[in-house]
Length: 183
Image 1 (cartoon, rainbow, N blue to C red):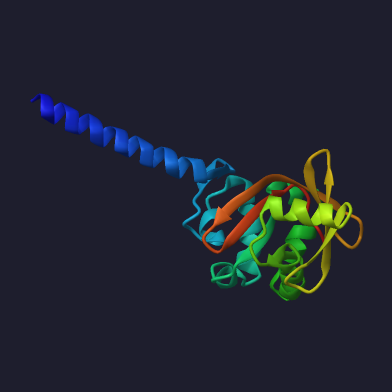
Image 2: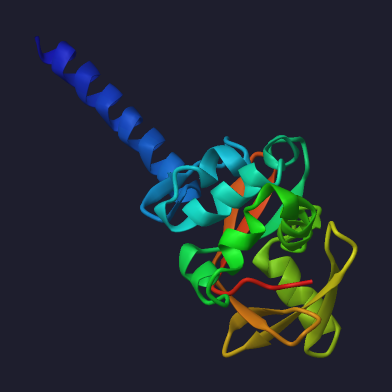
């Protein structure tokens, strides 16, 4: 009986270590775990903070793209980021006749390649305070630092802050941002 208890305790410890290992790599976003083994869309659909982004990705027909191999770096605006836009902007962009405009806005939040916050900070330092990023839609974003926070600036001067960085995905990385950047 004693050996059964020892074996049970051993397997319990091994199970606890496995859970701890997964938890250390999994970040919580919008109240949901973001598993590094899942793709960008499969994780984002579970975040209560990204329901607007997920609806926009679906309306723009970009689900398959963001579930593809990538890798992608996505600056993912929260629902509150979309709420900062002028009233009616999101509803207008979600209309079928505005699909190309919506695609342009969403692909402006995506950079080809997987770039961690550490990568971005290194480029910012190398660029003497700024790093230029070419987005999937071909337009440029500028990454910079302010008070140890990574900031992303669009061509019009709108600035977004990375609030949660390095949310690793099977096909890239998500950096959660607090403002929608516009091409």
